[in-house]
Image 1 (cartoon, rainbow, N blue to C red):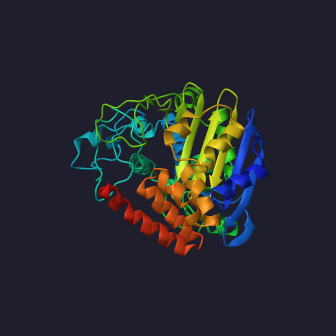
Image 2 (cartoon, rainbow, N blue to C red; image 1 turned 180 degrees about the vertical axis):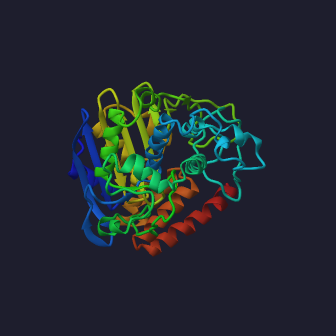
Image 3 (cartoon, one colour; image 1 turned 90 degrees about the horizontal axis):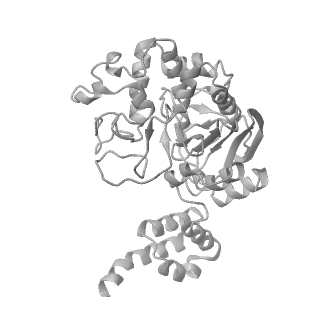
Length: 401
């Protein structure tokens, strides 16, 4: 299929995502927008190319562009330790003093994605040793850049990227003018979720933007705008090959796989295909972008539902022929997976009508619980309770055998 509003509306409906905004670039020129659905499941307002979405991790390549400009201007070095600019960031960890901007931008600095009570902020391997996706690394680089320039992230990004490229409805912090045309978040079943308005910029996830604005940024990527030629080439050149499954690889392991994916200086790469990509996942907001320097084609999609990436393989296939190593590596699961198809049937026919098929399909317990949650979301509380009771009986049934 070609990327069109009718098919996109069908896909977001199947995935229980209220709305989507996308921009298409062909041969280095904006080819148009495909926008469909609603900004909120509870209101009729339609999504358009100027609707503001959480960019989620699409924040990272925009920030990377600002960092590379500062490197071109001599404010910092790609390979100098960030501790030269921001000492004692993690005082108890000597390896932190080795992390460079190159390693942060290529996700090889050794930090976790995000710290928590079980995963404290420290390096889990020697910087540069392997790929492990890290929002914490980008936050460290952000703090170093803020220390160098004396500017907060949202001011710096506006000066170096947003204003020069005319991204007029984009910001790393909330702008109250966004309220007039904003997308609202929704959970995996299309129900409204809690909405946030970032008051403090975070280079890894807080960018608010639109399909129209991000298309202008993609055009600048294809043109190498505001970067020296060597720098523009380097940020889309593989810095590290991804040889392990999953986005985070903190623990040592001997398992290596051929992912077909590498990382540049802020972009994911499909080296054999010559493509750059990035995805975004802020929970109830999802995003994906992919482009080719050779064809000068690019696509970006923003979705206001937690299941948004489940339709991305089909959307991207309509834009770019061939299998996508990037999406296979991300492995979000498809909207037409057996679990999702059975949920759809259970919501329309009742769980009793499909239970035999469920029971013999060898689903994991968490998959059946997800179906039960989906039944509750659809107002089928009795069916949900019935299914949860059957789930509880399963271990006992196995024991009796």
